[in-house]
Length: 154
Ligand SMILES: CC(C)(COP(=O)(O)OP(=O)(O)OC[C@H]1O[C@@H](n2cnc3c(N)ncnc32)[C@H](O)[C@@H]1OP(=O)(O)O)[C@@H](O)C(=O)NCCC(=O)NCCS
Image (tube, rainbow, N blue to C red; front, top):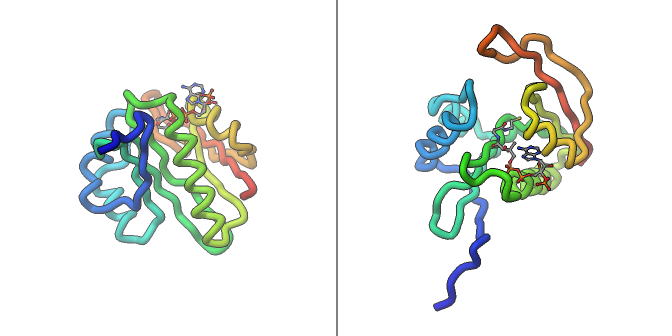
């Protein structure tokens, strides 16, 4: 029997049974996380939701995308804290581009906090550009924080 390579990963549609591990991770990586109920609502509304797992079936990353006509909106992308900076976020984002393209989307949009340097660097690397700003969009520890609106042609 051959062992799976150390960097083995699989991307699968998110299921109800994933929600607990996804929301535990969400709480570890965001100061203002989605609740388990937010993920459940998103799943039942038919969003494009994905999990990435390692060879042991452990969660590595997850993503939520809304597909409407020729637009894709990336609503959430998270990588397990201890597994960050190993290319999983980039890999999952590439998968989302593929799914979006196959569904007929020609542009992907997302919102990101100006303070989120890791997120902004990832999206810059993929060619996202800032197309707008929503003042006070996010809760923050000292009040509110703007959202940068980014877009990328697919
Ligand atoms: C943002 C996030 C999804 C990136 O996932 P990741 O798997 O750690 O990132 P990757 O290893 O795929 O990195 C891809 C590129 O993104 C950029 N990047 C990722 N993390 C970075 C960091 N901490 N600092 C600077 N650049 C970073 C780099 O350009 C990197 O390429 P490089 O490694 O060749 O330099 C992850 O940090 C995360 O889950 N953060 C918390 C949740 C979050 O903020 N999500 C985005 C919300 S909009």
